[in-house]
Image (cartoon, rainbow, N blue to C red; front, side, top):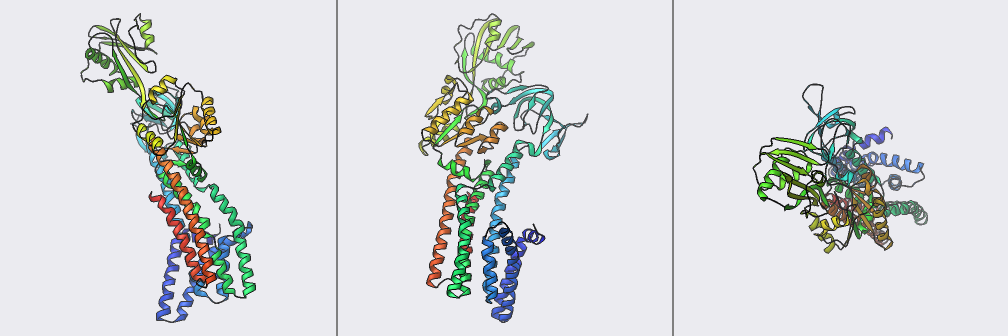
Length: 607
């Protein structure tokens, strides 16, 4: 980029203000001081504005492209030749004003991208020797730093545990709803949540290497991508622009009217047609990004609009990924007493199942625990009020010689059992449940928008059907391996459906790749996010609903802009033939059409 170009780019607003001021001086001079001031001011406006146009036109010609700037530059030079300085000044000012409006639109959408960073952790607790942990900006964290992560906090970096232990919610990584116990040397990922315990994490990846840094890069790349419609318009412009130039030359030679030939150049600038679709694409993608929806290109918007079938992974996508008490079976003894004993023991545990039980405990009192011992992989044995209390899974009970004949909990749930003095007393079924908004949104997808809804899961068929019984699903398939999910999507596509798959785990990668549009939850694995076409950063179905709406609205906006551009060219040609359109008025209409498509595109920003 030359110094002159850089100056104009860095001072675009100032240049426009100077040109506008000179334009005002020109008209004031015309009415109060005579034509000399008017002509001089118009010449200055034209010279100031045409310099960057000539430079850009020259660069395009180096690549054998006749750009819009080429046509405008020739028109301005021609106006100078025939002494129409006012026409030259107005044409250049209008073009510069259109450029400035385009820049404003792009800056607004870029701002939307920057707001994505607010979704990532902004600070971290860095450990400095024996001093108290220091809260620092995430940008100050470097690989090798040790960070303290407390219960309920989001892990801010990718790294490994060097001290402490706790449970981390990694439903999107493993497909399991129960959080994973993390110990020393275990790896942890940015974006996961420490649900219990305290960890010291050695930083391995931070900054742009984290998932949120990559998301921002994806949006920026997406805004530079082209839709199928835009590619067609670009190919059309490559032939159309030289054709206009040839037509202007022929008109000039035949009519011997240079002013008319220059007017043809002005009218032939396909500005609104060229800029209309990119403005819609950039505005649509930028607005979606502001809402935490990363769309990887304009092509994706067009594909998403055509989708008629939504296929969902279950765990972590439709469910909360957090276990909750589903069923309570009181087998022997008083229910309230049994609840109190169970809650008393679980109150001293950091296990995620213990949190689910305590949330469901109907009382407030706890009994003191005399002694407790953790049985690895099985549960806890304790002494409470002189009684031996066992809390754990079926394996603990069976190994302790306790009969499970009376147990009748749902087979599709995780079981927490309690025995007192070797007698089975209480059974709790803990299950992952649907996200609160899932039922209403899926009902809307089905009844109002007429999508076909499919759920595919690696869980057992009975588990999947049990969880999804509350919602209107057309097809529920469980016991599926990743390749099986991919095969089901292929079958749907072979039947003529346009399929979007929504998932979050690495096991969803084949299905995301196979689908016409792959959609990943932002809380999911890096692999799923990398290959997905759309990323829902906040991991909610409300965002999916917005993404589908944005795609339809953006594509509709593109078509509106194309219609405006074509109508403008038709009306200008009619006006030229009828003798109502001249160079300045033609350029005014031309720039107004550009302004209209820009403003129309900017409506997406306010959506």
